[in-house]
Image (cartoon, rainbow over all chains, first blue to last red; front, side, top):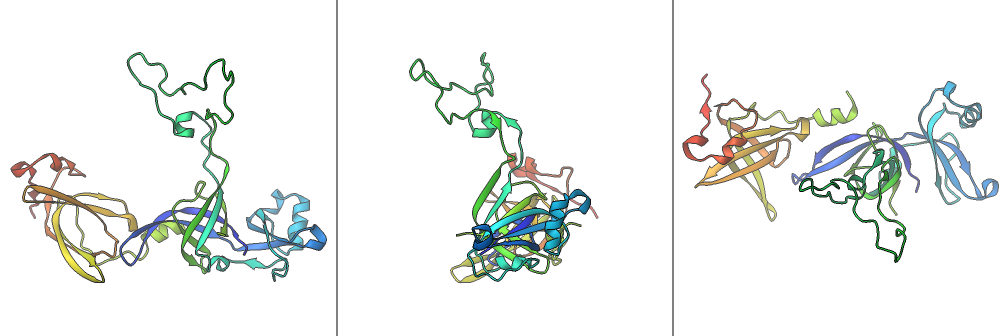
Length: 206
Length: 114
């Protein structure tokens, strides 16, 4: 099964009939246009390439414009590939709608997490704070980073400050709460990586 | 209006009366016991309202036999069968959390004059 490219719109909640409140993320999923069909013969593997989101032709390089023209579509902002076994019925220029996810009970959502810049270990690795008073000078500093002459080095993978966020992440097995085929919306339970209006990839869970 | 905002504000229930902080209200709560459901009244003072649209909730405080009970009801929940106002209160705060530390005469809410 193939997935979709979507845009995270925001969060709200819905109620079950039993009165239980479910936090949901609203994602505008598709419609995506198939821009290329790859097969074993021409590319060495079978896949389809799809695009989503309008982009002005003047901001699109000429080779890309030609690529989109072949598929008979306006330039698209995001393009992604999904591996697919041979024998599928997708053709170049086809539109893929959210209905492809209608039967999926669980989906994986991939997005770019919110960028937090160069962050310290408290925010980045959930380490603890030092004492603020009694002469303490390591309020948010990290503690010891290792032992002594032996081993004489810092262990690989030691949690340290650095870039946090703005990184691709996948949240797996999110329950699909509702699919609105008219408005191209999918509601998944819980949160999804990234900020509002961020691009996400949605595919059925394995 | 964006789509999420629409989802939050469209199709809200209109069967609830207007009420505000300090009012004494009756919340008819649907309670499920096994496969039977019945309705139980929870009567108390509104000490806080939070959120808008379908995320709105109301905190109701009641004192029975010296023991205070606070419940937070999501207003749009199907488990809230109905709400009716018993008394209007006159208050000077948006949140009546100060009632928590008080008992007896000090914990009263003045009734609104009409």
